[in-house]
Length: 410
Image (cartoon, rainbow, N blue to C red; front, top):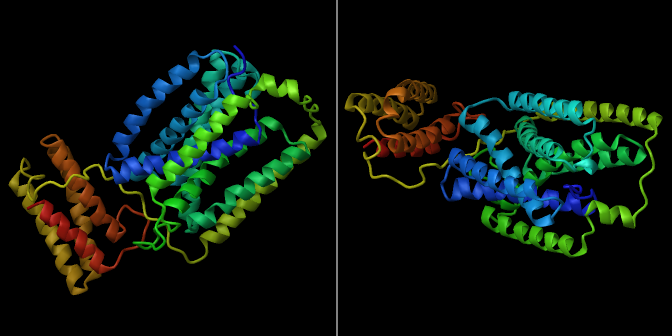
């Protein structure tokens, strides 16, 4: 096979950021606006990823359209996997970041042990291409975890958050030009393009005024409009690359001189530069974390966007269990109205504990009904900051979600 990966030119990085941005905004549109939900969206894109990857692997050379389509799909898939860990399974972002870092190191280790190269200029066999796409998938998951962890630590808005990955990529580029190892430089920059593109997407799509404390703000284009804009830009770029073939490795090598061989001394110096860059970044994050801020609220999983009639969701549940849940919700609502924040929070905590304890018995009775109540229950808990990183919301918001929960339970 010819090399299955495009030459790393400016176009490569431009379209990579475009793919990452549309992956973030398009996934949010399907998950939140259409109400498909995180888990269901992940299943859908996993199936799509398997199909497009199978097509990509069958090709004998790099072809722009299937390659970049695979990148778009894998960007969505890797992002969703991290979001499920965070928003569904409540895995802390620092743990997700650590796990994906170890997993990526393992992928690179096995890849190197088998092929003795990690260069994307030699992806000319099926095993190497398989390692490449596995590494790409993990980098997207890792980039999602570290990017979201950064937002959680700092409370920065998406617009401000664009500056950090952009600055790090610029620093890596400078070190690469100085003489840093090109393979290490490439993969570091590749990981950072994910939080860069995602922050751009959030900045464009988020409303101009935050609806809740800690919510992102931006230009209010919406996830659908943002997705359309960037899909159009991706399509135009892919058409250009298909016509010019300027990013095909063989064409590029015939046009440009081969790069000079590496200088071991400069590589060691640049490696020290990478270490200093990491230390400086960690120091910046520690400083930002120490500043007063409100962290971003977790993404909602609107699996049950279709509203069920009052009482319909719990129709198949034992009346005694429903009554116990309603009693706790009513107590929390009463305390919230009277200004007893401590009592309202304690009742909401007990409501969460009872709901979790009853999951094993209630969920098999009616999956749809349980999912509907669980989605509203999560909104209630979010207003109290229970199982969510945001601080408690105003009593009016708590009352609104508690009343909606009581209405759903009839």
